[in-house]
Image 1 (cartoon, chains in turn blue, yellow, orange):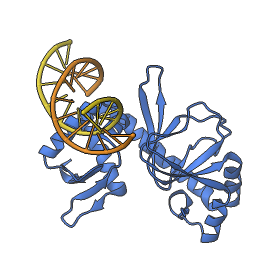
Image 2 (cartoon, rainbow, N blue to C red; image 1 turned 90 degrees about the vertical axis):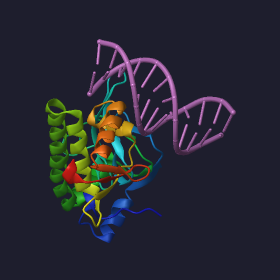
Image 3 (cartoon, rainbow, N blue to C red; image 1 turned 180 degrees about the vertical axis):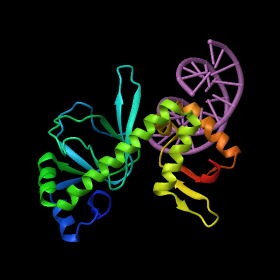
Image 4 (tube, rainbow, N blue to C red; image 1 turned 30 degrees about the vertical axis):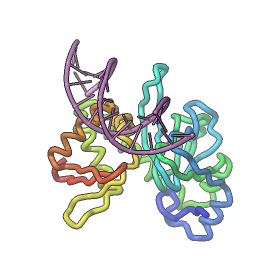
Length: 220
DNA sequence: GCATTAAGTGGCC
DNA sequence: GGCCACTTAATGC
């Protein structure tokens, strides 16, 4: 049986409180590339990422995607409507990896926010965090090169979820294909492939099996 | 086996 | 660096 844990967005809740939250929603397991909701649809529910990786993106009429943000364990999305009265989803969302989501109806979400002040307090922190991430990425994409963007992406992941090895290298579980990375940093898959090749040559990165990399942040 | 998808490469703009 | 064409490798009926 899957359960919620008191980290990320639910940090600080007691076991009893987590139990109470669990009773207000339902778990949903997802395959890779499964749509959670579409941009513009009526906002009926919020999702907490239990496990897996989710992409929130916009798509134009030619099918070009622009990834706004990624969500992983402990993240709640979307962020709109929590403080205002937005009625529709602000972007589309789909799973990148398989995983589990915890679904809370709009009503349940409102109840939780009013019942647990500690959660409400987290809200500002999360909004700020995601906002800064987004701003940094936009700034990178306007002023930076593709390799700079990939380096920034890898550094952020190392910081967030890298596992330090004894020799100072970091093991990174990307759980993304090169295409996913390309979408996220806004370049073509070929470019990601070529930049990675350069990083291998520079010994800044090594392959470590499917979806995994070993990184030397000092050489990025 | 065959089809599909991801990854890698070279060429052209 | 994008885009196109092509090859190769891996995965799944």
